Length: 635
Image (cartoon, rainbow, N blue to C red; front, side, top):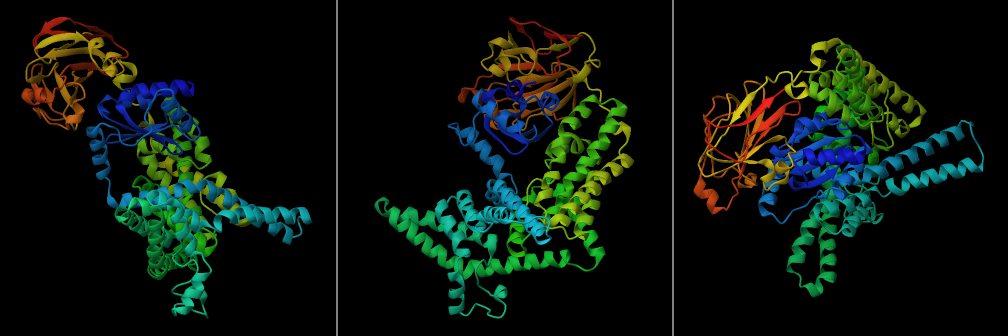
């Protein structure tokens, strides 16, 4: 399947362009926000060729496509099929819904996410700078050992070092610029806050106010670089508040002169005398704590801490807590000249690779071709440090392999901590991270750690994951064998039964979600069209899913665009999991409310798993609820 075909299929299964309000992507995932999640065919999305996994959180979906492919498919979705890039729309109901979704997010996670947004754009430069410094260090060592010599290699080493330090030497400035973008301040002002932190005059100011320690300069309450990245982030956050408030009260004619000057004066002074010392104390304490573990002379402490850090890293990722690690990386890089935490945590992804290989052999044994295909496509990315396709497509859906992978990764983490591996930067965590490690010994030990994690994840998964846990479930949708012939569905309302093509909604009219019929009615009651059970009730009460005794899955979508009412006007008469008979009341409608809102109550009834069935519909007729047959499903 080409990327264009894949993009088209994804848009269709999302319910069409009109159902999507926001489109974006990260390194491996297409991220979309939809108006009505009930229009999304999640089962078909998961099975779509090229889709490695699917995560649904409320109205937000993450479609795992893998590195490289995700950007191409996202661009096609936006350019060819006109999916919106994001931001608020003119539909206040839609904006309100999306904002409320965001408010559900834990505040702590939101803070970590903001911090992550500062550093994510910097990661390519961090990786490049780390590689430049790594190769410069390697070349310097080779010249010192007499392996290479001459002016050419000296020049090359100087150029590589210059390129690396062009970023890392001014890390605080770049952080300030991107922090300003996140907090809503002027980016150049943020860069100035970062520049203040590394300015030479800070030492002179510190001496004048008695905060400088001549004997131990690094232990000074105030000195150049004090507070590091944490200080810069807080300084820019304070700047953003000051700038916004000053701008509100300054006349437009004076804004260009007064706002920058006053904002930077106030924020700059507070940054130097308050934030830098306080943030310095916090970052020093953090680094001291980490150093205590990292430099522990007791092997047991190092082994246990390395094991736990590597084993628990991916659960932290799932909880969104990993964003808080990025400032720690930055602090270590600034104060220690290298990052010790990243090489340990990088083992987490390697454990997933080992577990996935074990699952591949089990899947081959039990004949799960779909899982084999997913693993084959995702393994190359996993070896290169991009683990999402394996996590969301293989280990996490199966459950137990996600845990066994973490345990396997722990052994690699213990080895890395035991051998004092440090990196020049952080980035992708697989084989491509080897050049980021400091020194030849560090690179070799990192590779050994990866191999230990691969093997550990493989062995533990093979020991604890059984064949039956990997064998593909036989579901109705896949083969249709569970569907009995001549399953009948009856009208859920009194009124007229019309063809789906007459519905003023392209998602239903084009049968994107499946075949079926629709109803125009005046009553206030929706009843069950079959004997079966209720399998789904939308949170906004506008849609209800049933599965009949023959295995046919039915979706009743009450009205058009009724998702925007957030449940108003609907009174549910049943609960999820409840058994129902033909004619049993499902939903009561407040007709007066719907009339006042001028809502179109045309109600589609769709067979959502009818791909392997012949569906016969009876339309253009008057129907009586619970009496008139409107759909027959035949094998």
